[in-house]
Length: 156
Image 1 (cartoon, rainbow, N blue to C red):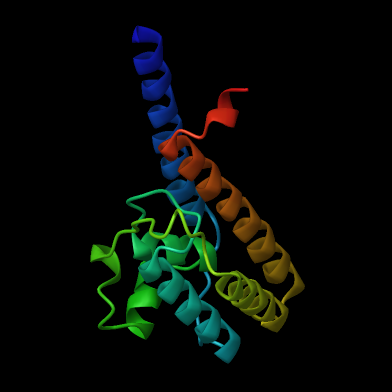
Image 2 (image 1 turned 90 degrees about the vertical axis):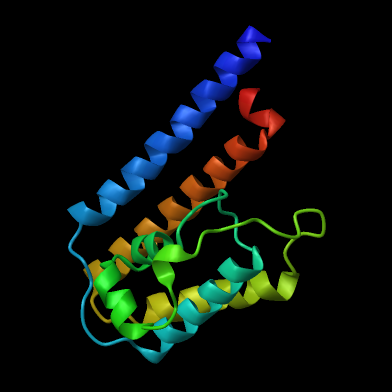
């Protein structure tokens, strides 16, 4: 069991280093500013709903303001200006409904809203940067979730 403890500690260090990477990544990029499009508002509303319901493939403990800022490539001040009473920095993710799975309609809706938001970005470089960033974030969060729950095939 010493090997199990060492393996668990190594996995926890991987999760922490990827969380650090994600937070540093946001500060290195040009942050988005300005008005919110209706597509962005709809996407964020659905993300917040899914976050609160525990439907997203995120590891336990992710803060809502960090998650949204990373996804939208914007500073937390842009989020708090738009969502004044949302208490973004105090809300942490808790995975729910793991046995029942996420309802299919929630997944389809979130996917469609994300695509609508991406298509609404008129600047091609920004569109591509955000699409790439979102894909990387979803993969990183999902990998961290797998590590956190001890998904056995990670060691295969």
